[in-house]
Length: 307
Image (cartoon, rainbow, N blue to C red; front, side, top):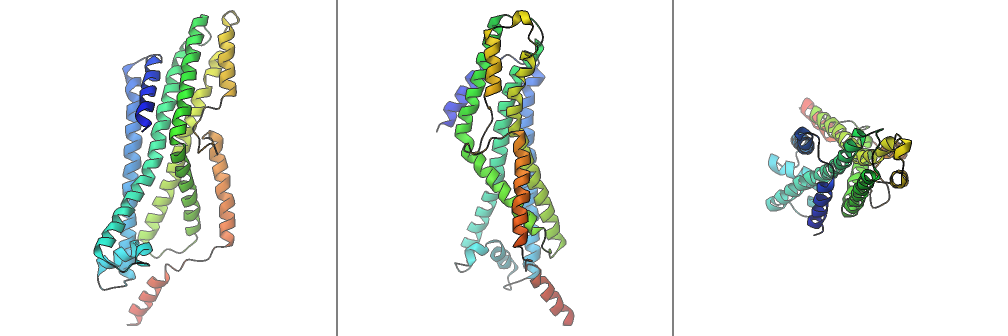
């Protein structure tokens, strides 16, 4: 409900910013957003197709019934059929839920990336104008206007963060959890090449997506601090109260998206997440036991060779 009003505020703040220097720069933002969305969702679809292939392969090697379709649905919906008896409507419902969860999970990351790209682009739009007059003598009114525009962007970032911080928290928590799980599973033996292909594609896609979310989100903080480079080059004759206030605003404010205020998405977060993953993984390895996923395949091969 708050999103339309928030987008209206975004539009008003955007209209007040300095204009783009060229039409190409204006269309660059839309191009980046479209490319990120298409690439991320295409890779997500490829990952899901590989998952289907690996499950089909495994269900054929480890049949629980004579119907291969039923074997596939039982394998992919074990959480349902451990409680309920098998039925076609329930199997279809479980598969639909699986597809929806897969793309919703990826869409959360894409959504955070898109919002981050948009906010960073607005700060960059302001920075381009500031760097255009770097080292030049500018009137106090110029700095007052740019400081006001900067404050508007900071307030917009705060409001956006208040609206999506829960999504950001869930996104990073999911990614962190599944990276740890995938690293732990990498110690297990895999029954087929289909499983190997799916596992490594999924694992590297997960790491790449997590890095992309982190770096795109961190770009907001990076762009918000760039005006300091301009303010440090202001000539002595142009130094005024507005320049001083502008500099203090940038130095003291932390402009970044957050995960429910528990953490802020800056470049330092990438190293913190990496350290956390290593710590968790060392703990998990101590309690690791080899998965029995390959036992069915090996036993079936033994029976078939003896027959």
